[in-house]
Image 1 (cartoon, rainbow, N blue to C red):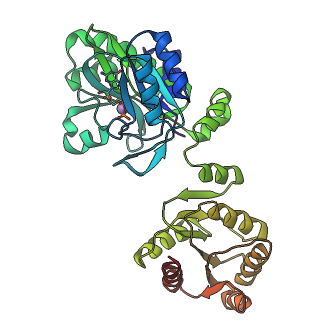
Image 2 (image 1 turned 135 degrees about the horizontal axis):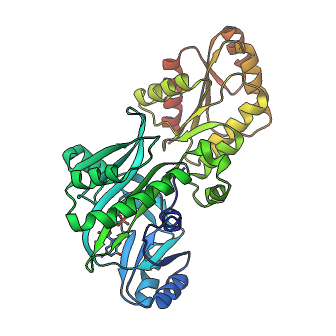
Image 3 (image 1 turned 60 degrees about the vertical axis):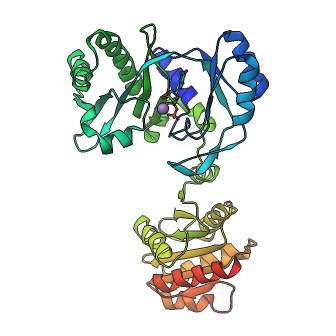
Length: 385
Ligand code: GDP
Ligand code: MN
């Protein structure tokens, strides 16, 4: 679960990381009030869960309270699009904070390295840029040090990373202190990523986190009662959120063909097959084993919450749950709903033929193979647009 910048900064600040003074607001008037209270130039920053906000127009410098209100006006409710996020996201809140005078921008991050089975500390002098880009084009510009799980983050590990990145001597001590605070926050909230980019050296030589990103391990939320409250505020996609409430594995993919299947592997191949047939998958949804009517109904409802969906493809492999039971479950589910898009059902496995026979004469279109099913739904959707 990704946290918003203002939430991440709140956490980091609680652990002693210096952050700019500021507050999050949802209106231009609110932005003006914060700027007035701070009494100095501010930056107004869109609180959307995506990188590259600066280039997307989501970060504006404002010298006066009026300018802060204007900046908030120009950001709030607007869709921000970046190369990392071509679909774009709408900012409902802005963070208004004191503008800082930047002398240098560094990158500092802690994350899990699954290959090393360690948390790793990363430091780079190339802050302010997308770290993935630095990693791809200039990997030696990032110093990475593994953190021993028994010792925790030691002073010498922090220094090794800082020296390794080429950080000037006089900044090593303050940055080392910041890294320790960052690490304590990372461990305390069960994060799997905590990064400060840019970590700024101000023109008067102070160290401050100008941007912050924290991703929490959702499996640890049960022991993070305080953070669970943040969940509501950091909904990335309302349908994905609803899916997690319903216990369904759903991932939004942005296209117009809804996909439902049993088994993650099968659903992934279905997504590929639809793309290969020239279609654009709207989602991944694994309903798991069985296909009881209630579960199917929940799944279909969920997929149709996405207004872009123009067709539905079921891909079910009958194993322990036989194909005819699956077909009955699907038919029963559809008998209780009004569905106005074409639906193709591919049934395979145990009693698949019986299952397909049950679908004859209903609005549901049976298919035998995944390729046939993908082709059919792509044609039907193309015919409708
Ligand atoms: P991101 O693009 O979404 O990662 O947003 P950031 O918060 O990292 O901001 C992007 C860039 O905007 C930073 O690297 C800075 O160059 C600039 N920026 C952000 N806050 C300030 C500020 O308070 N003062 C100045 N001068 N520049 C800032
Ligand atoms: Mn940033």
